[in-house]
Image (cartoon, rainbow, N blue to C red; front, side):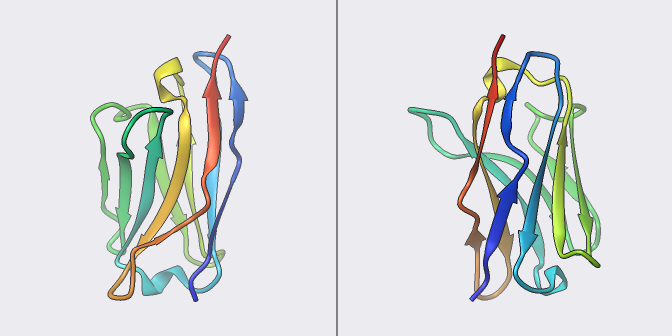
Length: 115
């Protein structure tokens, strides 16, 4: 049973930064891709970013240039560095991992951008 645990959410002012982490219960080398989606109140879940097992990445246009995803295979962790945050980035951020048996989802981490 794959478990994903997000951490690092919180409240930040516009223009600020936060770093989210997603820790997997096993080796992340077993996943073809990992990444993040987000869901704001009243909205559908929205794609944010993916990092593939090759190391290549794909970002949504709305976060390109502000968010950076990285992975640490030794720690079985994927991280999302979020800079220059905007109020419209406010959402619950969900980590996901994909392989033949997935996708798998974390429980979500709240990010609130407000002055």
